[in-house]
Image (cartoon, rainbow, N blue to C red):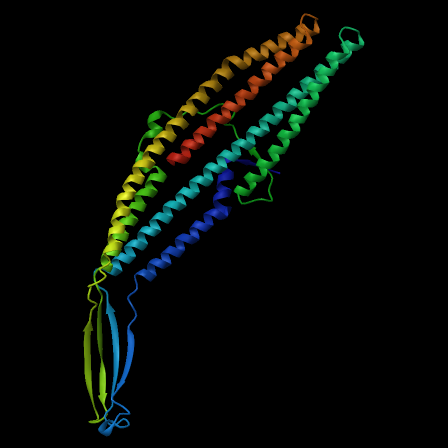
Length: 391
């Protein structure tokens, strides 16, 4: 068992989690592809033999010619820069993906860490109530022996105690499951961690509406789409460059066997763009750019709706938790103590004691639930905005 804070859990995950390493390898791979995209075409060596093994004066190799040429494609239309520009944008997108993966991992660690700590508190709470039930059961057993109450009340108390112990076992199993999940996210599956935090002792003040909604264009999912739009523009430039044919230059030497002499040979060739000028691919790239404008608009609407929902849940959970802490919990505890003493004095029935105990238990469970909802909403806001409110 190893005690660990939220900050330590995040640090371990960023170092050890394989998902981060996978994206890092992808970036390195794209950087190598960029190098490849910037290379010039290889020259071509061409050898030709003409006018040999023919008839009359061309019999054998008497009148033959031998030509050795070096051919080089000269790229026109700025193709090389277009390729490297496209590769640059691919790298930028993957780096943005890296940031998003990192953000997703951090928010997943925070969520799982808080879930684990919540289970820990619920277990402590359940153990406390089991102790109360055991105390009540013992008190009732003494009253039964003294003839002050019926055996039925003792049976009801025992049933409540057994049910509480079954619930404790369920919570303990859930705790172990979440504990394993957190260890896996940290990339340390062999370690069993115990969460340490003070976030549940008192809630951090929720961020203001302006803090959440300011600078929407910097939201990771939107930044990724802006980079995707740039990639599509780079693809358009690349497709447009393909509409310009490349020039092939050749230069070499020719040997004329009949007169035993050499001569130089040079040439230029270029494809005629009669049937295929890459027009379809260019138009497709233009449509993709227009499509991205609509995708960005849709994502902005989704982000705003998602943030509004999460922020409303955040404020609601915060207000509920404060109300429970300041008013409902103290009143429930006071009512339980009054009912408990009244039951021992014979002023209240056993059913009244169970009811006051149930009300107190439900209030404490709801308080923990509201705290959990608060941090879940805050983590969701962090994931959407990329901002760090839980430091």
